[in-house]
Image (cartoon, rainbow, N blue to C red):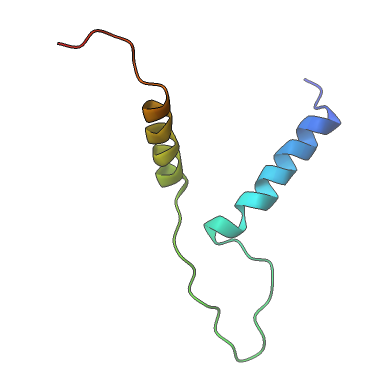
Length: 65
């Protein structure tokens, strides 16, 4: 499978945008400084919230009962 330049660019952009959210930081702390605690985000929590929003936006048309 050939990876097109647009697909590669998209994948790298998504990684670059998501990395700081999940605690990846390439900056070195100043000497003697402790890194500031980061909020702990999880991919599963984000996917759950997206699925919940999708279920509310697109309700099921099945008959219930």
